[in-house]
Length: 313
Image 1 (spheres, one colour):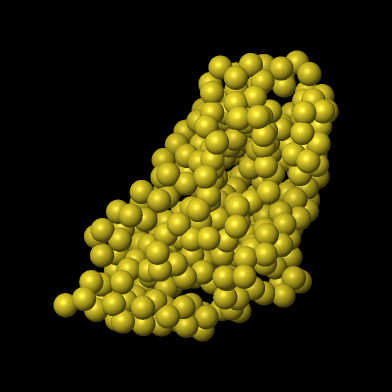
Image 2: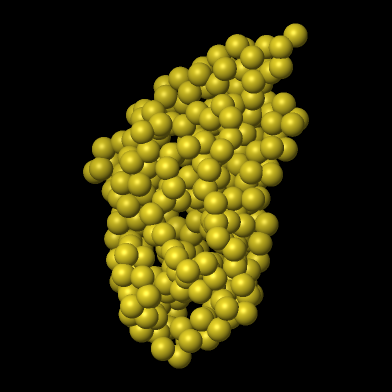
């Protein structure tokens, strides 16, 4: 008997397009056909324990009994780089396949999905160099460090916004360690076999309305109280978690920099802008098959996966 083909399914799309629901729907449909599937989270903010409301983390009911991986694995004081996440996700995918389970990758930015699926390698890091640069960042600020980067590597600086402190520090670190830094992404070349990518699309006005409704629901569900609790658990001391959309705006409200309504509206605006950036990056990948974000598409995707598994039998 031939070996069974276990594909990797990646469900892409902008925030609020329904990726999690689609992933669970596909996994449920596959289960009905006797094919096990589990969801592998690709959203860097769902890894944080306690960040539930503002990340739209799927509840137990929404998961419908389908196992979800890489959710609630870190405290808000911790941080994981794209390289760290790549390793975690790839090991999880390998584990799923080893058990005869179809891994369904869902959520996250194009960068994270690209890093997980493709031949995407990262330069090394040096804790002492990183610590020194971060200390300089605290004193000099991101703009000054970006100016230094521009003097060392104008092309690298041109690909990084002056206010993006994390990428500026990382670029300076890589230049110090290797002599060069590239701000462009690698080519589209899968590092994993049998990958299927789909994208969920819907009209912009529908997406905008979904985002606004989601943000208002987050506030109604207690996002401000959630942030207050996370502050007590060290949210401000972490390097990554506090930057998440919604959390950053609520912190500004708690600090008196914004009114509550201004924080809510800033979250809506920022999420819409982020969704457009996500969609722009995903659209650059020619391997993604775009489908309407509706239940019929979920069943269509499940059918493709079923076909691949059956062909491999």
